[in-house]
Length: 354
Figure 1 (tube, rainbow, N blue to C red):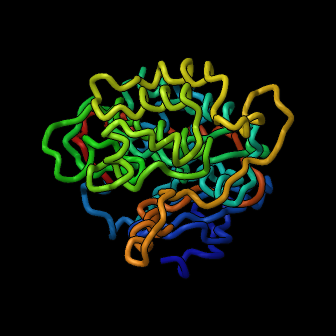
Figure 2 (cartoon, rainbow, N blue to C red; figure 1 turned 45 degrees about the horizontal axis):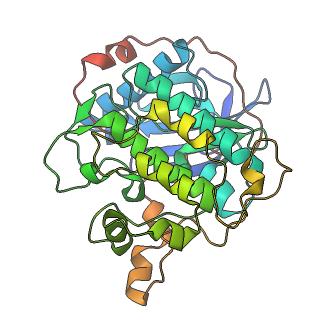
C-alpha cells in the first residue's frame, strides 16, 4: 500500500504524497505537499477493500466527531482540512504538526516552563469535549501534538472516541494510560469521562517526571499495588512533594465515583506550589526562567527491571498507536469547507472501534 501511493497526487487535489509518517494494519499516514500553496499536511490513507463494515463505520464516526469539534470551536484539536473519497481509497487531510509530546519528553526537548501551559491546554480541551458528550478514550503523549516550539497543543487521533457516556468496551486505549476499570477482564460498564480523567493524570506524571508511575493499574503490578496500599511510592520513587501527590491521588483515584473530574483538575494542579521536595521543579512555574525539562530516561515504569521484565516494559508497549499526523514542515489552517452526510449520521452509530 505504501509503495503504490508514494509520489502520487490525491485525486481532485494538488497534494503530493511525499513521505510515510506511520504505517498501521489498515491505514498509512503520509506527509503531503500542496504543489500550489507549498503547505505541508498529514494524510491518513485507508484502502476501502481492507476495511470491515465496523472499521468503515468507525472511520466515519471519527470524521464526524472531528468536524463537530471544529464547528463547535473546541480549541487545540488537530484540524481536519478535507476528506477525499475515491473508488478505492479514503483520504483524511490533516493539519501537520511538528512533534508529539512523547518525543518532546523522551528527547528532552520540552522546556520546563511549558509543562503547565501544555497541561492547561489539555484540561481545557478535554473539558470542552466532555461538555459536548464526546470522550476521547486514548489520551496519551503520542496523541498530543505540539506546534510553534511546544507553545501550541493539538489533541489527535479520535479513532477510539465515543459519544456514549458509559462503555463496556474493555481494553480500549493504551495499557499504561488505562484506568483500572477499563482493563480487560472487567465486566462492569465504565464512565468514559472518568476514564479520560485517569489518562490525563498519567500524562501529568509524564510531564512533570518524564516517567510512568507503573505499567498497568492492576494489583499484579508491584508499584500500583504499593500505591493502592497507601505506601508513599510516588514520593519515594519520584521525589514528588506531598501536596503534588495529594493532587495526583485525587486524579488517579481507583474509584471512578470519587475520582476528580476533568473539569476540576486544572484548578487543583495550578494551586500546587511545589512539585518536588528538593525544589528541582522551579522551572515549571509559568513565570520562571526557561530551562529544559530534566528527564533521566524515556517514559516507562521507573522500577529496576529484570531481563524478563525488561521486554514487558520496553518502548514496544507504545505500538498500540504510534505517533500520527506528525512531520516536519509547515501546517495549514485553511478550511476546505468539507461536509459529509455520512459524518452527520455518526451519532446514530453503535460503539464501533476502528
